[in-house]
Image 1 (cartoon, rainbow, N blue to C red):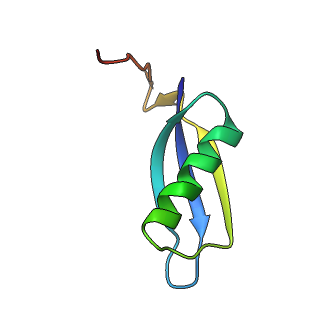
Image 2 (cartoon, rainbow, N blue to C red; image 1 turned 30 degrees about the vertical axis):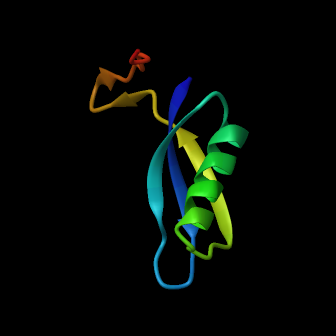
Amino acid sequence: MYLWDCYAVSVDYDPTGLVVARDEEAAIEKFKNQLAEAHIWHGSVSAEKVDEIGGYKITLTKVK
């Protein structure tokens, strides 16, 4: 699983969010579902994997 920074193009503003998913396609689909549940219209969605921020490596650990 990876952390994805998702971005959508909309009319009034451009929603963003972080999503945990296995690949880019799954991240986009998950973010689209979040937008749909919030009734946010969007034209397109993109996702970029977040591996490192400010020289710090990002790792995910599943909480049990």
